[in-house]
Length: 181
Image (cartoon, rainbow, N blue to C red; front, top):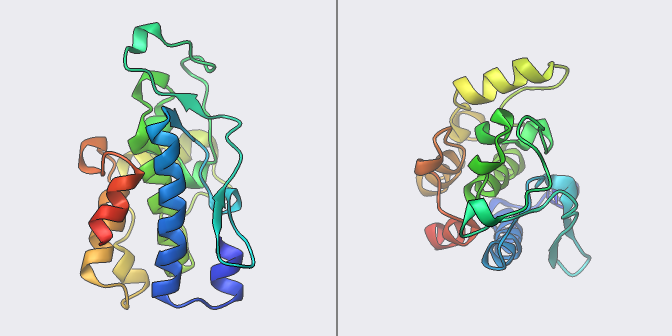
C-alpha cells in the first residue's frame, strides 16, 4: 500500500479510501474470529485496479469467546509481529492480551505512516527491549505535527487507534471505517 500511495502520489482522500478497504478486509477476519497480528504496509497489497488485499495470515490467532478453551499457537513470552507496527500488548507477549484492538493499533500505525511518511515511533536499530519501552511508555507525536493537512476528525481516528491503552482504541477494524464516515 505504501508503494501505491507514495509512488503514485495519492492524495489524502485516495489514501484513506485504500486504507478503508484494508480495514474492511481486516474487519472480515475479525468477524470470522481471527486477529492478524502482523499488519504492515508490505502485507496490504493494492492491485492495478485499486483493489486492496490483506495477505500473510501466517501468525494470525483465533479469537476465542472462551479464552480457556482456545489453543494458542504461541506461548506467553514469545513476541509476534513487526516492531514498527506492534501494539503495546504485543510487546508484553501475553497472548491473552491480544484481540481485534491489536490489529486496530497496527492499522492506525500504517495509516499514520501513509499520511506522514514516517512511523509513529522511530524504532529502527533498537533492541527489542528498548523498542518495547518506547511503544509501551510514550505516545506517538500527533499526526498533525507531521502533516498539518490532516483534518481533526482523521487525526482523532489515527491517534485513538494508536492509544497505548486498548480501551481507548476502536473495538475492531470495522469501527475505524464507521468513525471516518
